[in-house]
Amino acid sequence: MSSPKPAWPDSIARASVVAMSIYSARGGATNALHLDANENPYAPPPVVGASDYNRYPAQQPESLTARLAGLYGVDTNQVMVGRGADEGIECLLRAFCEAGQDSILTCPPTFGYYKTCADIQGAGNVEVPLSAAYEWDIPAVIAAAKPSSVKMVFLCSPNNPSGNSLTREAILSVCDALPETLIVVDEAYIEFSTIESLVDKVGTVPNLVVLRTLSKAYALAGVRGGALLADARVIELLLKVLPPYPIARPVEAAVLAALAPSAMSVHAQRLAETLAERNRLADGLRNSDFVETVYPSDANFLLLAIKDEDKLFARLRQFNVKIRDYRSTTGRVRVSIGSPDENTIALQAFGVTDIAERADRIGETFRKTNETDISVRVNLDDVKQTKISTGIGFYDHMLEQIAKHGNMGLTMSCEGDLHIDAHHTVEDTALAFGSALKQALGDKAGIGRYGYVIPMDETQAQVAIDLSGRPAAVFRGEFPTDHVGEFPVEMCPHFFESLAQTLGAAIHIDVKGDNSHHMIEACFKGVGRALRPAFAISGSDIPSTKGTL
Ligand SMILES: *Cc1c(COP(=O)(O)O)cnc(C)c1O
Image (cartoon, rainbow, N blue to C red; front, side, top):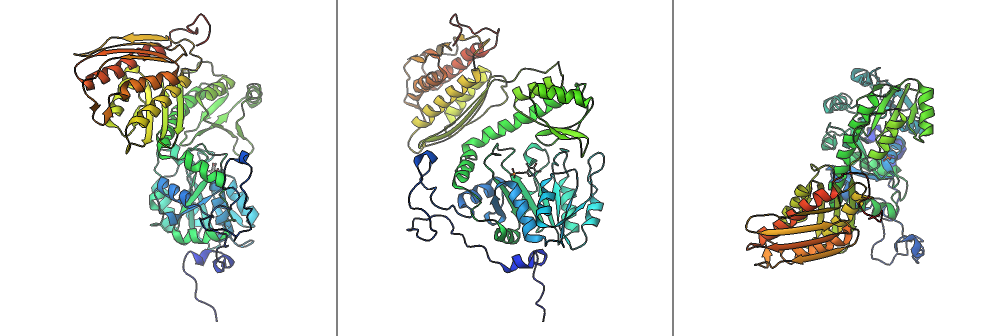
């Protein structure tokens, strides 16, 4: 007697996997006395840095599934966290493809690891190639995926290496036409695209699987962290074939730190900068004698058709620049978007002589203590990049004044112990701000160094600044009230002391007036105004007879 056909997705998974239960690795250390996993009771030597490394981690650390579910906007039972998106692909093949029997479908040229995993598993690979212009043939994909032996269709969007994307409608039409088949949308580069992610359809479209990675947009390639997002029933099957303890404890800590809420605005600014650099690199490369075509890209790389190849590769070696060589499969090469300085070198290697604008002066500080968690990014050359959130409305407004009048971009996010008072938040953000400014100034070549201004209304503030490298703060002024909003007025001089300390500057302020709000605002505006000429590039010398600042 044959048993009834199991329900989807068990119906398309390998029978041996359906019959399995999850390998029972212990679910992370609790505060019980753990004599259940043959661990060593002693913490490893302190060089390793963490006292809990002698304990096995949880199979799926809850902190991480919760953070990634939050980041991508799905439920925690719709996430599988693994060693990169790559591990999600491995598990899909292992759970659904019977060796010598089943297949995946791919649309080459695309990410090579899908086929590698199929080869390892002994599964077939049905190919529906992209057109010469790298467009997908959706009706052909649907037709080729009809046989029940095709268990999953990989749609890489934005596609690596071509850089173009499928529309949401096209992908959903494939999901709709092949309701039994898993439609795996690899969104490794979606953060760089204007097309919206399909994560909002996870669960409601049962056969949709979305791969996301922390390697690209979140700068964590060396950590190995990624997520597979799918209907909870699919996740349940995949967890059966996920190897034990895939997330090492230091990986969990690194991911949580890198994705701290205070860091998200800096990630957003970096992303914006990568997109701006993608434009600059593409514009530059179009002027290269070695480049025939720069393909449009929704990702953090550009695909190029090139000419005079031998000479180009000789130049790339000379400049010590490595690019990805796909000439044997597509006749093309792929160049990743680097930092502004790196892109400038790449353009030089491509023989581009007319290179647009020097790199922006940028400084970043991440500062975390028990009292505050802060990220700051300053851009001395792009005033548009300003977004401030410290939890103290008046103080945000004051920082905006410095940014505006200092003619700089300032992204600042702080989660501070405001339930106590404003003190730590103001002090620590000022310290972090000063460090970021100092970093952005670099060797200070060409800067004006000094600046001063005398503003405003019934209040008068005189500000003099010297970016001397030596911290000093002198504040003269009496405020008529204790507070402005939640902001204690004594934090105004303290802010400038802290800023002077990490910026390495002498800041002198004299303020007179009848209204604390005006007086503080005049100080912040004045410092911004004074910093503007001090930061401005007016030559190339270091403005000191000592030759260093
Ligand atoms: C880089 C890349 C991945 C791998 O991501 P990891 O999270 O680093 O494993 C997956 N898919 C595509 C298309 C990629 O380019």
